[in-house]
Image (cartoon, rainbow, N blue to C red; front, side):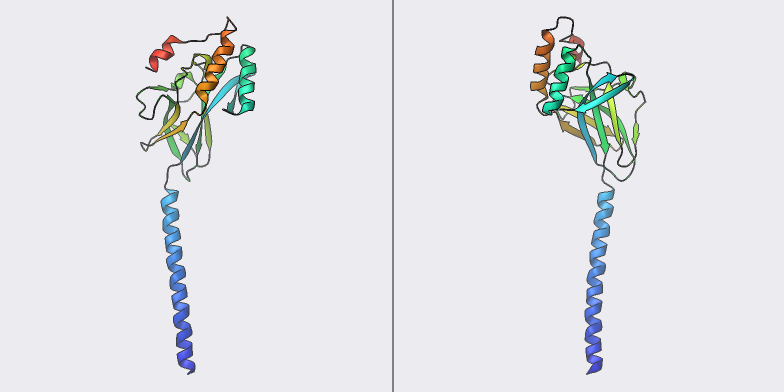
Length: 197
């Protein structure tokens, strides 16, 4: 009687240990798969020069739009920026960054290395859970085509990450209207418009 009870307890314990082992195996497999994922967040921002450094802020919050409006009225230059956040668990190389009208990247405006702050050559190495802000110093928001809808970043692995620029067109039209009241500010840039065709 005691032997059969002991064997029953051992059988139950073995079954429980087997289930725990199987569950741990599944968890380890899934974590390995997810750890290998390339995961980037791409955000569009505006940047302005304060002293000798660029300060970026994200749109389209009401507070940010109000700040942009004030800076335009003051005649200050605002430049498009891209903030990239590496959410992967290993280093990633970003090969290009820019703005586009659509996801096919047929019409895109890539940020040229010699027109970007900080000045560095692509590919840009990003450590795990780090961020990078690239500001295109050759473009002012008032000369940016209003039909830009996406910001993108491509990686050395051949993946492309997009972010849709929500409400940017409406904001841009408001900014250009404000700027048109000031005759000394540029409102259109035919060269950029031609690049985006």
